[in-house]
Image (cartoon, rainbow, N blue to C red; front, side, top):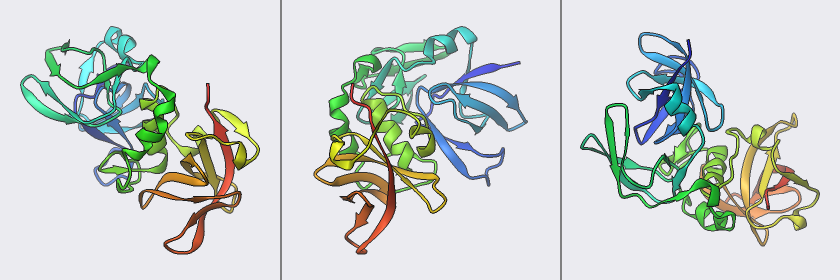
Length: 254
């Protein structure tokens, strides 16, 4: 029987297998809701409603909710662009950017009372032209495989979060995101905020970044950084070589 959960913590690791030693494949942020398909004594197997990503989380790191609450919360209602603090039954939690909220004011889920003064905006009217500034807000955040926070983020987690705060829903992995948007043929057709995708020797999409214009890209590689981009790929001036091979250019302009 399927049950449902609400992430009430700042950030929760989602693992490939039900073990603390398993690699983290993504993270839940505050406000994420999910379906629960299987449970063990310590772990639950979930599908995040936002991007349909599957994985295992610790059973102590979420709140059970009803199907009615899940259906109400499965699409983001309000999002934040800056860090803030939420009080959960008088316990305080730091909240990361790109979290989701069901209300601009206090709200209740089960026996939990949430109070916040976080500046949130409706997801449906978030401004796409703000992608440039949102991307810069993550500059120098360290790279962590599966990460989605200022304190550790991967390439597709970075693009997903930035686009989420701009009101555009992206899938989780780079290869999945490459199936979205409209194809462009040449780099000189790209506009600020478009996504650039990169492949490996086998032709598999393995990396994604955001075009800044003027042959610059911001992407998560070691850290969120700005590099030169041309028709061949990303050129890192610090090591004087190309690091990623350009494969696809995608526009999400409305």
